[in-house]
Length: 149
Image 1 (tube, rainbow, N blue to C red):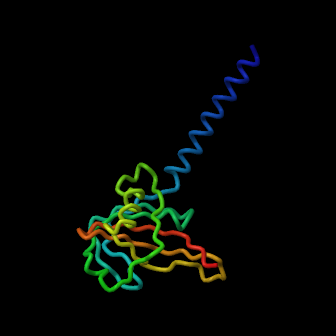
Image 2 (cartoon, rainbow, N blue to C red):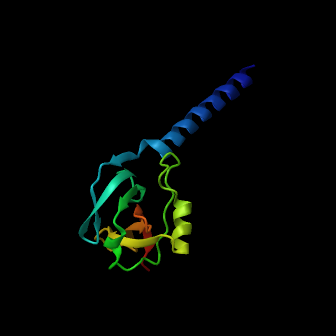
Image 3 (spheres, rainbow, N blue to C red):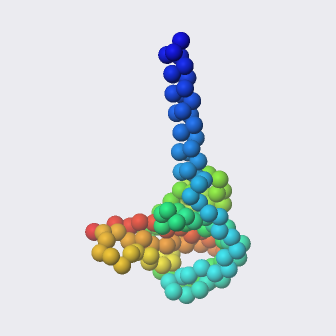
């Protein structure tokens, strides 16, 4: 009988700790960001509308944003060749990284390097902020690591 109590208690503890771990990874460290009226594009402010985003102070890679922009603003900026959107939590529905990746690869959306946020120390990586823009003005923002070796 004591073995059943121990196993039942142990399984209950595992379920509770698993739920806490899931919550902290998927929800706890993200902050919703709304109402941003401009983004920085290589040092220049660019007006945006309908900004919805998430960010976290725990990692520079957690930023994601969905907004509308005038695509003509990006006409003089060269397209990025290494843009790979990162997954967002499922509850942040406007950022579909799989569809965005397919559209960048097919040319339906064009990705641009919006800024370099690499720390000034001598690191072997860079942190770049990317914006992918569709011809109709839908745009998406994220950061990613790139090796610099």
